[in-house]
Length: 619
Image 1 (cartoon, helix red, strand yellow):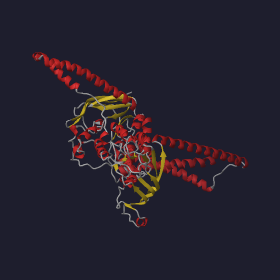
Image 2 (tube, one colour; image 1 turned 135 degrees about the horizontal axis):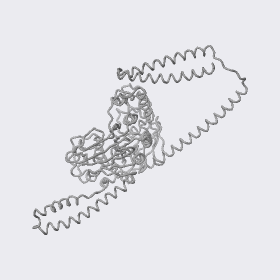
Image 3 (cartoon, rainbow, N blue to C red; image 1 turned 120 degrees about the vertical axis):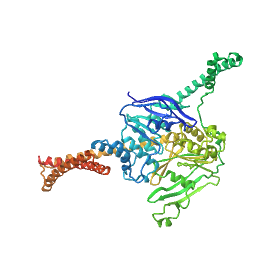
Image 4 (cartoon, rainbow, N blue to C red; image 1 turned 180 degrees about the vertical axis):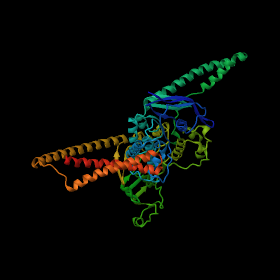
């Protein structure tokens, strides 16, 4: 396999904090690599350096194979809110498409439309400002994948995606021959796509071949070996310390090398490796939970022409763990806001007659039915959007408990860091801490896995399994749901919500079996219909006298018109191709010409089929 990328001695620091120092590695064609590290360890910084968006502090050397094309998916996608989806992609990819000839440009546009359809964005004319966060992410992925770059660099590609989109992306990348380096917290996605894991730890990079489970085992071995070596160094240090103390007369210029070596041993002996974990012990426990949690009776919610809930009835129980799943825009977050009473009267109308008279400027939705909450309910609501910290505040300003902060992987040297200096994942971890330390008895987590590192997720899962209250999770993380949810509320769209007893993998297996059975039944019915039609055709043929068909006057005129139309279409296509090749067209004219060529190709195929059909009757 060809070497796509060679890295030598690159480093990155922020102030006194060293993210990585003089690291090097090689990426070969076909490698699919997941980059793992705790939040704030430098994953995004490393990817930005490789993508040319940032520079190494120490210089170093970054060598890509000549002429390979690189695509970088960042967590935030820059877009023009007024552009429609298709125009946004074509504008953003202009640096790529400007070098394409007419045929390849048309193929690129076709790929764009295929990926948008695969990601369930069939309305290419929808404006970007009307899209949800998950839909914007799908647009960004479409732009990247349609370009068919040789080397993909992806920072959290599954964040904000619904499960259907994740599985579509997973299926594509697992079968693609592309070379890939990505950061992801989705453990199922990682296992099914990647064949290698890179780990950033204490400023160094370690490489593991194989899946996530193999990584965990090999990492534990590495840490155990490191600490065993540290114990040996400590024994040597103990002997050297005896020499230092017992023979002060020997500490002359001749023994300076030994004193320097002693200091090196001191440094090495202090470097004990531990598998960093977030401790939840300090936030365990919850307020007393009564018998009534939240009771929903015949609840419906409409916003404009869209129905988000249609006569929904369900009583949440003590200690149950419910997963809420469904496509982006199906109403999951809306449902949570209704449950918590988070929406005020200026957002929700409860009178159908009043709602019927509202103007187009009235942005409220219509809520009917009843939602009752228990008197002893204490809700902890972790929002997908997070909260707005004051960027000038420090970590200690937000949570004034140093012991608790240390247990949540905020060491002493980070306590006075301003919020604006924290990584996205570190802010999420701090936000999670502020929720859990309230000790709620109903914990609602809306997309909790976004931006959290895998280490934090594993410990959070262990905490939630033992949570002594009711748990409601909105998530697209299949592993997270499998470990925690007793049953699922499936948001199917158009207000329909179904209850499924079991975890997410069991639900997907059920759906696959159902779809397979439906396809088999449809195929059987199609075969039966086809055989019946063939039998009837044989009867009709046998009964009908053989007669050679001749064109009617109308068909003759149609045949002549088709010949002229085909000649005109060929001439128009040739003219458009010449104009595109001239390089004189503006972008809008180029786009219009490309679209027209597509229409001509389609029209030509249709007319040629009809021409051949008529021509057979003449011969």
